Image 1 (cartoon, rainbow, N blue to C red):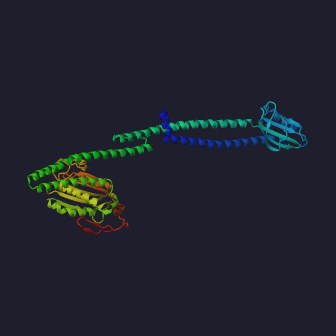
Image 2 (spheres, rainbow, N blue to C red):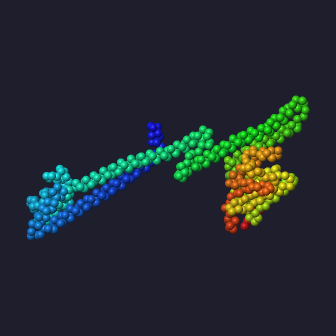
Image 3 (cartoon, rainbow, N blue to C red):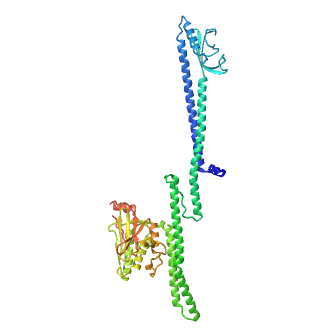
Amino acid sequence: MKKTSASLLRSTPFRLALTFALLFVLAFILSGAIVYQLMSADLAERLDEGIKETYSVVAVTYSQSDQEDLVLAVDSHAALSPEKEQLFSLTDGNGNRLAGNFTAADLPDGFSDFAASLPGVAPGTLYRAWSGSVGPNSLTVAFSLSETEELDRIVLMSFGWATLIISGLGVAGGALLASRVQRRLDGIAATMDDVSNGRLDARIPLLGNGDDIDGVSSQVNTALERLASLVDGMRQVSADIAHDLKTPLNRLQMILEAATDKTTRGEAVADELAEAREESLQINETFDALLRIAQIEAGARKARFVDLDLNGVVESIGEIYADVAEDDGKSLSARIVPGAPCLVHGDRDLLTQLFANLVENALRHCPKATTIRLSVSRRADRIVAEVADNGPGIPAEEREKVFQRLYRLDTSRTTPGSGLGLSLVRAIADLHGASISLEDRHPGLAVIVGFPATKASLAQERGVSPDRERHTRASHCGAKAGRTKR
């Protein structure tokens, strides 16, 4: 319990709640002091008005030739205040009392305060008095300040109790709110502790009320899901590397052992060495592809991004691989958007690699007489490139798996390759913010890659001709095409 209390006192939510409660109490005290001062001033003003009004009522009864009515008025008003809450004094020029319930002595004209010592009155009772001359006489009217003082005490006590209650409620409410927030923060800390201990499936519990903590928790959960996915991917890659490279490494070992035996017998080993060289090159190519994918996923190439025409990239791939496809008994054609460049923001070399991998994949796994088509088109705010063929296609349940590293279909295990071509395609597409999907063409397969169009490309589509720098492009085979300006 002590540990929980100490933890609560150290928690940021409780300190914030306590600070807010303190500020609220200070604001309440400040506003209460201002209200008290205004109220006291108003009561004093009302009291002075009452004294002057009573004085005027009494003084008006005096007539110049007869002060009997004045004496009667003073005595009658004094008789109405048996507890001497109001005092009246009428004295002559020599200070002798003519009427009233006390004798005013040495009080100046106008308002004054004095402490009365009268029978039946508590010692030290304060009065507020107004003195003035009525004919040859001096008239004083005084009201007790006891009611005003009592009201002041009531107000001060009310403010004091209100301050205590508000302070208590503020601290209690702050502790309650802080404990709730602290429980949620403890849940986040516990989840992160589980993740640090290897439980990558741990997630922060959400209340579902859409507050800022839920928002942050959702983002952390998304990051944890991404982390778990990456770790699972790394585990899968490690397993795949161990599985897929075991065969070529074993084959390389057998070749080298055979070469060793031949050397011992004095026979020529040139064929075995050539075969071993091919196996080692294939293994190196696999590792190079894995490293390239890792570099691309890390975003190291983004610094080289420029606005480029996707038409030129696709056109270059078509020119390069058209003869290769023809030699292999297949046909390859490229169709681009005429009249205007389809500008995307990216790396020309990586995009060339993307389409080269897709075309090589189609050439490698499709039978003779297959038709392969490359095309570029505009769809709303995206530039869509497509590599389609009428070959055997890929089963629907395998289409997402083929993007995994080192994954190969059973039908393609006898063909050359490492199973990293489409993984590299996915990594390049993700780096460019492009979507990629596989569609069945009955027969055949279409790989559709959608790139976000640049602002300049969108402006061209709307018929606007923005100022922009002239782009030059060069293909792998050295062909150059001039850019057409609208």
